[in-house]
Picture 1 (tube, rainbow over the protein chains, first blue to last red):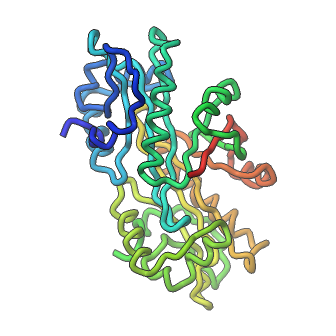
Picture 2: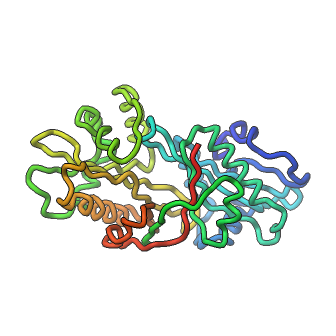
Picture 3: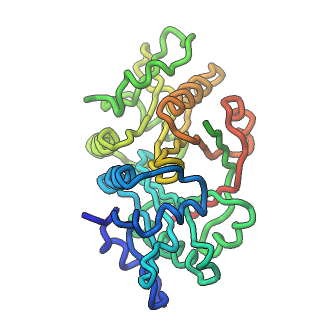
Length: 165
Length: 165
């Protein structure tokens, strides 16, 4: 299967009004050749991932339960991936052996800003998360993005601590 | 297999000096009968999880790749689980198809406070995370716990937003 998760799971959650030349869909195996990693490079360091390494990681995510819900927007004219965001689900014992969802790796191609693609992705993921039955969704962001994410129901919560190796 | 992850993976990361009647180990399938869910109930709502539901979730976590690194401390005299914390690993494409780790669901039995069991768990998980090669570890906490977690290398970072369903 070429999709990182089932496209039919995504379809009901896509908001109406997508521009004609753009499609929203799960990450696909051939997105390696459609600039997906270059797009992620606009977010943070990606490093050198060749096609084999990409496909290996893709496959590990695809068979994972719950799946990695990596959603992309492709420009069907240029055949490039121009935006992406992920919903990662973690299984718990708490909350009736529930699950929580996290919005990860939100990025829109700098040439495609101001077309509300970030909003499309966030609406899609929040709707998808609800339908998957997660009891909570969360994300981390810089203070400047608090107003953006608050549009989709997120509220500033507790502290977030990190360490890097 | 009765362990949610391989005990030999954990062993090198346990700090020395554990009290004699306490052992630290991966969550085991029979921890259902050792008060694991009651312990989690000191953290947040657990709901009604019967043994079948517990074992089903346990099994889903056990076969997950990467595993759910749920670590518990058992009092070998009372045969009760008295503390727990988890390291959950998420696969990424960014950072050379790296992984990030999250410290989740840290809880110490209220009758076992002031014995530094939380510190034992945090030291163990940070060491384990490093050895697993995660590029970053993170956690969420209330402001009162910032000094506690800063002892283990965590620093207050960006904003953390949530919504609940």
